[in-house]
Length: 102
Image (tube, rainbow, N blue to C red; front, side, top):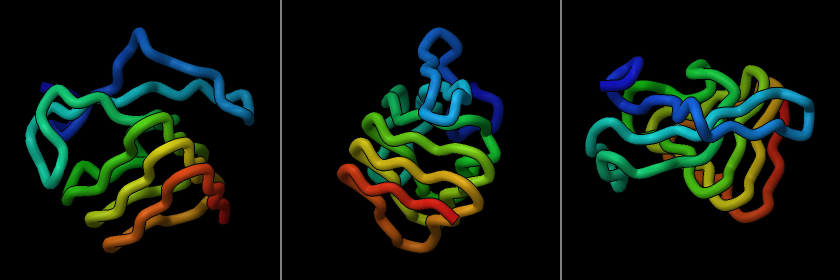
């Protein structure tokens, strides 16, 4: 199982983001919410970007940078970017080509 039991970082699937940060694609290590075990997600800079509790998920080619955080049952999907100190929580959804920064 992965680092936290919910998801793991795919070490051979990394990108360099717009801020020059290295981001790793994630993979679900178990079923939760709408996510199935083995499903590949989007990209995060570190495990600090995605809660290991609840049903929060980053999917598609979405990217999480810096101190940005997704938790609860929130989703970041599509080609969305969340950066800075932005928090996506509860049942919030950030999708498409949205950019959220805080």
